Length: 371
Image 1 (cartoon, rainbow, N blue to C red):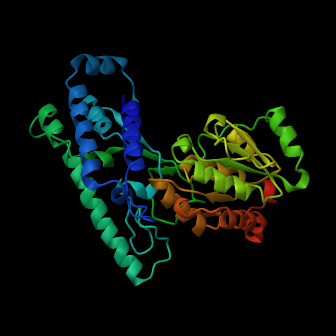
Image 2: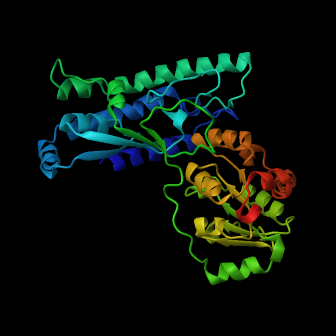
Image 3: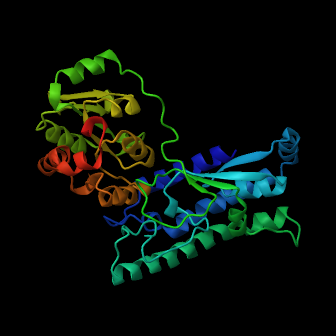
C-alpha cells in the first residue's frame, strides 16, 4: 500500500506539472505546482489513509504477520501513521536529494541551500536572505500538508495518544537517502542518515551485439548516450527532436538515443550517426569504455548511475527535482544544464562538444572512459 500510495502521488504531481504554466527557470517544487493544488492532493491521500486505518481486517492481517521492521517510502505520510498504529519500528527510504524534505537534519542555512532555491553552497548575503525565506516558505507548506492528516489522526487515535506527524519523522531508526556525497553539498548529518545513491546499480553485462556493432563504427570517437527518462515522450516534441537531431549531426561520435520509433517525426531525417531504440541498457552502456557523454533529464537515478561510472553529463531538466539536481551537477563540475525552453541545435551542439572535450572532466574522473 505504501509504495502504491507514493507512486500515485508522484503520478498526480507529474501530470499536474505538465500542464502547469509556471515562469521559466523557477525550480522550486511548490512554486511550479501551486500550494493549494499540492495541499488538495494530500487532502485526498489523507482521506485514503483514513479508509485504510478503518479496515480492521487489514490491520489484523498485518499484525498477524509478526514482522519486526517496516521499510517506508518518505512520500507516503500515511505509512507513518500505519506503523504507529501497529507499534512497529521502521526505516525510511527517501527517493530524492536530502534537502527535498525536512526530516529534522540540522539546517545550516548559511551554506546548505534549500530545495528549489537554485542556490549552491557558495552564498553571499542576499543569497542567504533568499535561502532563509525559502526555508520559511518550505516550513509553512510542510505544516499545511501535515495538517491535512489532523482529521485522520483524531478519528483513529485516542485522545492523549494522538501523534504529530513531525514527531513521527524523528522515530525512524534509519533514513536511507537516494543520494551521494559526490552529488550533495556538504552538510551536517545525523548518525541514522545514510546516503545510498547507486543502490540500484547492477553488475555490468555485455551489451547486445547490434549496439556493439554501431559503437565500433565510430572507433576512438566513441559514443553519446541519450536517455531522457520514462516519460520523455511527453516532452520530446517535434521541435525538440528536430533541434537535438540537428545538433547530434555535428558530432564525430555515434549517438544512441532512447526514443520510440513511433514518436519520431516523419518529416525529420535522422542524422547518420544517430540510432534510436525504444529501450536501451542504460547502466551497461554507461559502463562501456567508449562512452563520452550522457545526455539525460536530470533524474536522480540517472545521475547516480553516471556518477558511479564516471561519465560527464549534459542535462535537460523538465520538472520537479530535475532542475535542482542539475544545479548540483554544474556546481560539482560533473556536467552542465541546458534549458528546455531555449534549446537550439547550434548552441546545443557547442555545449555537447565543450563537455566532451573539456579537460576538467578528465581531471575530475581518474578512471573509466575519461581515465
